[in-house]
Amino acid sequence: MGIGERLKQEREMKNLSLNDIQKQTKIQTRYLSAIEQERFNVMPGSFYVRAFIKEYATTLGLDAEQLMEEYHHDLPFDQEEKVVLSRVNSSKKNSSSTKAPVIFSFLPTVIVVVLLIGIAFVVWLFSQGYFDGDDKGANMEQTESDNGAGNQVQLPPKNPTEGEEKVEDTEKSEEEVDEEEQSTDQEPSTDITLDSFANNESNYTLVTTEEELELVISTEGQNWLEVENQDGESFYYSTLTTENSPESIDITDFSQVYLRFGEPNSIQIEINGEPVELSEELGNTTQVQKMWIDIQKESVSSNNEN
Image (cartoon, rainbow, N blue to C red; front, side, top):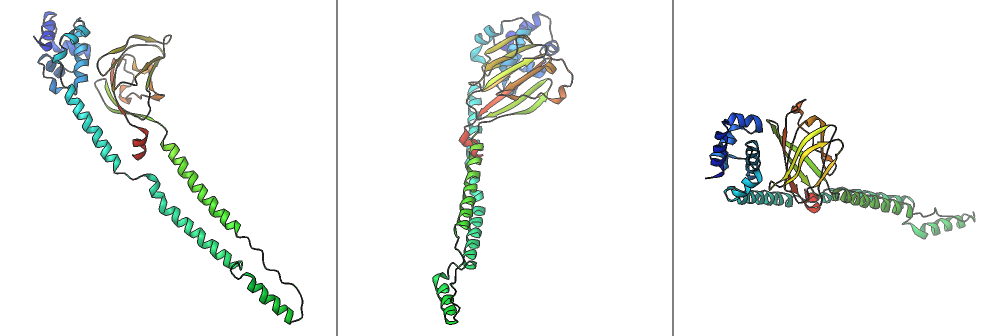
C-alpha cells in the first residue's frame, strides 16, 4: 500500500470528502486527489509534495513525521530538482560573464577630459611666453639699450605649476570616484521579491550575497506559527505572542523556507533586516497563510559583474 492509498483509506474511514479536507487545509482538491493517486508529477515540486502530505496527514489525525519516514522512498523528484537548479545557476553564470565591467564605460570620457586639459595647459604656456625663453628678454633688453633708455626689462613670471595641479586634481577626483563605485558594488545585499499570490499562498524569491541569513518574526498580538526548511524539518511550531517575540531563526544553510501563520495583519517578517512584504490582496483577512521563500545565494564578485 502506497502513501496515497493510506491517506485515502484514513479519509474514507472518517467519512470525509476531498472538499472537507480542502476546507481544513486550504490545499486545492486537484492536489489532494493527485496525492491519493500518487501522481506527484502534477505538483510544483518535491517540497510542495512533502508539505501537502504533512498537512493532509495532520488533518486526518495521523503522525505526519512517522508517515513521511515510513514512505520516504516513495517521495519523488529530488534528483530532478537538483538538475533543474544546476541548469538555472549555469545559465546565470553564462549570462553574467558576457557583461563588461562598468569601469570600461568611463575610460573614453576620462581620456577626452585629460586631453582637453592638456591642450588648454599648452595654450596657456604659449600665452605666458614660456616657450620664448631668455631670447625674448635679450632682444627687448638690447632694444632698450640702443634707444638709451637703460631700463631693465623683466619677463612675466612663469607659473606652470597651476595647470599641473589642476590636472592632478582632476585625475585624483576620477580615481576617487572609481574607488567609491567599487566599494559600493562590493557591499553585500539581500533582495526579496513576491513572485505570486493565490488562495492564501505566497511564493517569494530571495537573492543575497550575504554569508549569513537570519529570519526574525515578531507580532503585535498572537499568531499560530510554523517554520520548516526545504527538507520538512521543523524549527518552530507554536503560538507566537508579543511576550515571546521576536523569534530569531538562523536560515544560513536553507535553500527554501516554509512558513504557515494566522492573523497576517499583526505579524512582521524580516530576513537580515529586509521586510517580507505581504500581498496587498490580503486586505483585512484573518485566514491562515502559507509562504514559500526560495533562497538563491550569489558571491559578491559575481554580483558586481551583473
